[in-house]
Length: 494
Image 1 (cartoon, one colour):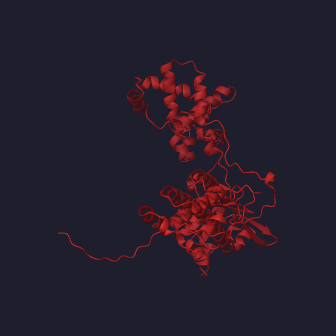
Image 2 (cartoon, one colour; image 1 turned 60 degrees about the vertical axis):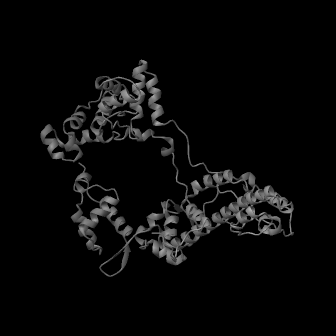
Image 3 (cartoon, one colour; image 1 turned 90 degrees about the vertical axis):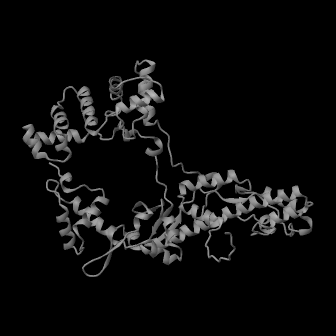
């Protein structure tokens, strides 16, 4: 049964301008330039300010919303739009954007743009080139290309040959078998870099040892080969005593063989991975200077162009406003106004983004002032998103967007901004310290340990408790894993 009822709801909706600002806050400086170029391509009313252009002053006020000139249909569509700007706001829009926070005292001829990426031959292309040098028939060449296409970035073939034989039959209509695939795989395993095309780490190391024997016949790699071939499990777990006993060798012989094995590359493809990954340079979003004990902050906006609303569109708006309000003129007027609205919103969003970034980073710099002055990680204060949000009077989600994928360049290196956020832990004397400080002390203890007898998690827990950091062993293990430090047994060296 149908019925009618009156219901009242309280909803919170983000305006298109707020959504645009939130998206721009997440973008780092490297990607922002591309985002601005995309907006310029999509919106003809937005353009870069090349400088040196004079604009005419216009004081005349135009009323282009005269109800008498509009027909009923067009009036309904037009009045439904939110009119945020008057005509004067469009026409007198010749001011230089003020969203930059640094002064550029160079002339336009001195400007240059940073290029954060470089080009090089990819790992896959290198293997394909080497495949072309081999005298293979058309079928084997296609199989070789298929195998190369299935190698991961580390240079390993993770798929089974049986599965690849099925794929070649159904996808490429090439009938083959495991024996033929193995034959062609051995050809690829002879390519550079050594070890490429291996199906596991053990095979990768054996391929590299075989290449060393081939290139250096005067040297003996038999012991290194035997350890990898016969005692690989003991080698990975660093059970050196078992290897010495079962291989009937001395500790010096084992040490010499291990030195040769440790020189091998466990991920041969990583040395020649795709240029987009290999040549990815970090471009800082913030730069902090130490000027005689006074910290100074600037935003890295060198690649960011000055934006303005197109003068051509401002002239078009004036022309359509003065013309008779026919349906065609009115539609053109609404189109021009919409594009100019969008351009002004984008410029304003860029301005707000820069202001928000500067305020947030300034608060972080003041909060961690001691660290940015000394570079001593033990002086880092516990800091969470809520702490900075309260200082700058912004939402925690906004601070999170600012900290995401942003880098800060300091006198002591370039760091990911979110790495400065850490939880607090209370010491025995009641003082709160950052968990990053504890990780730094833990890392220093492991670096200073004797490699023949590495410190266990229990011993590290005792050392930290002696220093006043009362934490459990499982917490020490968690911090050690976060630092990518293996357990004591795997840190042992002869």
